[in-house]
Image 1 (tube, rainbow, N blue to C red):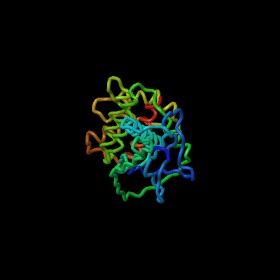
Image 2: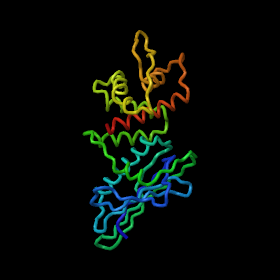
Image 3: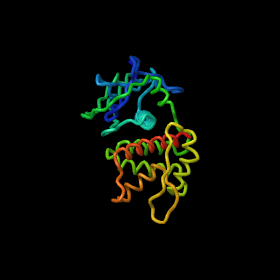
Image 4: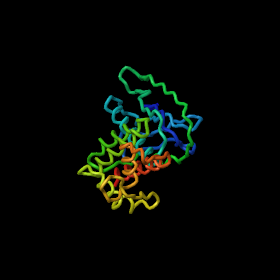
Length: 254
């Protein structure tokens, strides 16, 4: 058996591999031979097994690098497909080293995940996972952004997550860190290329102002200012959360 590294996953809902083949080979990788997506009988993804090429020696740097690759895949899955999240965890579970000088070694790491969340799931062919794994942003700050995006995915409170994601979007598309810049980005960059997920604009509720705010900014301000005269319903919040993830994913790759 070739060397492998297994990461356990919990809290990733709403997606599974819909065919018998649940592994794929990464593109232009000198170390990883295949990546197997582990899932249970309830069609919940529970892990990622990175099987290395035969003569690869596993060290801490390789484990760290593949943990980052797993994070990127989860970011792409979550933001591209807008998956529900609950207590998201990604942790090292097993490392198998058959090429060690003293003989083969299997290291087990304590990872116990318990989840009772039930959600509607959507199956995707393994080529979707392959494409998202091999997708990498060309932004110079991509490495930091993937880490920040992954960290926001671990925030269980949807309102706090929304605020953090909005701040991250401002960092990505608003050099002067203004909400107007986000609106301009959506109007000039995002909306023209996303006819199926258009973001609307509405007059701002700020006193003495007459400009229009995009939907995600309007919702952010309504929530942040705790305006009792305007109630933000659950449907409005859900739509704003969906649109915000779509703009973040768009900004990451465009």
